[in-house]
Length: 115
Length: 115
Image (cartoon, rainbow over all chains, first blue to last red; front, side):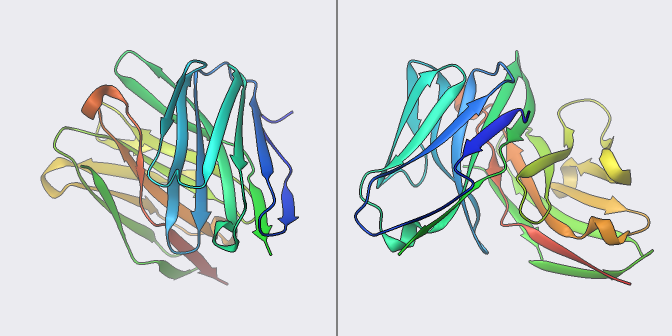
C-alpha cells in the first residue's frame, strides 16, 4: 500500500456541486498539506495542518475547506465547485525533527474536472 | 519572503548528454533545499535534499546538486541522461522563518530526452 493514498484518482463534477477529496497516510507524520498543480504554475498551497487541532490557510484557500479527522486523515472540500478549480490536487505529509526538515511524501494526486 | 526560480520551463537533451537544471532561491536565512521529480501521472518524489553539512548532495538515479550560497543556487545535474529521466522536476526551498518550514516550490522544468 502507498504511504499517502488519495481518493478518488479522477473525478468529473458539475459546477455548483460539493465535492470532497480524501487523503490518508501511513507515515505517522503529524504534518499534512493540500496543494493544487496547474500547468506552468507549479504547486500552490491550499491548506496545511501541523496536527489534528491545527489548521492553516495557504496561499489559495478561497473556495476550499478542510477537515483533519485524525492524524492519518486530511480531507479537502470544494463547497461549490467552479470550472477554474479544475486542476490536479496533491496531498502530502512531512516530518520534521528539531531543526531538520526531511521533505515531503506526496500522494499520487486527484485529477478534478469541473464542467 | 522566500522564492524559488527555475530557469527554463523546458530543457531538451540527447540521451547520454549532461543534464543541468537550474534553480535559484532567495531567502533571508539559510534554507533547506530540495529537488522533486514527477513522472507522468504520478505524484512528486523526493530526489535529493540539502539541509546542513556537505554542499554537494547525491540523490537517487545518479542525480546530484550543489548548494552554492554565494550564488544562491542549487542546480541539479546528471552526467549522462537516460530516456527514463524524462519527467517534470521541481526545486523547493524551506526556511525556519516563522518556524513553519513550509516549502516554496519553483514552477517546474520539464526534461525532454531525445534518443
